[in-house]
Image 1 (tube, rainbow, N blue to C red):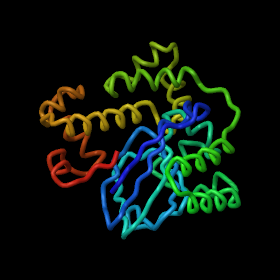
Image 2: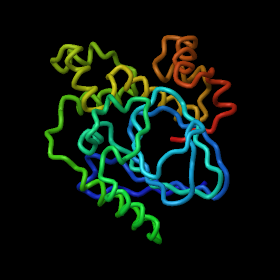
Image 3: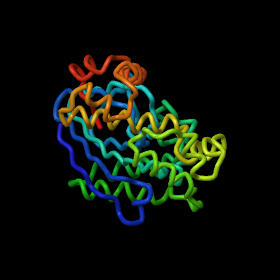
Image 4: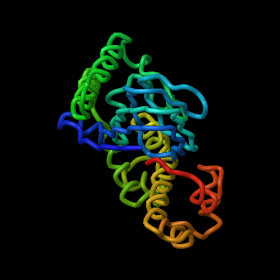
Length: 254
């Protein structure tokens, strides 16, 4: 597997964190972990399966709270547009909460003629910057004029700054909102509740700590869990496995 990361243009930076090009030169199967960001994917070579189901060439995947298995039978390549936590709301027509635990063809968001042109241009492109430029052009056509919810953006930053360990009721009080109001506005902008978003942020922090060589006991403490059993229970809720078993066998894709 080969990967390359490219930064978005200035106009797309509020909505796209980065573009990731992933190329598989042979058969490959790996585990997709839940994460706090939506993704639009554009495949320009080969085929792939998610949980044994064939996926379309252009798709958008919402936030997930469970693992998925990604399988490539052979040579395959994709351009991934990694949305910022609040970026998808400015580019997608579908209410974001409807995309939770769902992967949807981009045909539902854009005209088939637009997508056919993108697929043709990606196929004909000879290098990654050119491919990213094609995808950027498509995304800019989808960009809607809308006023961003600055309070939700601030809530996202607070959750990320604490790596998902803060209490949502305290966050709502700090922002001068009722918890129900924060949750309603957060779901509209991010695609899930602030509590679940915080749990996804904390899960990714756990993975980063493990990759850095921190012991499971150390991770539980560093990630703000009351004790080891709480950490194990929370981890199993997302992955279906205890941390020790998961990290011993799974290849995590971030």
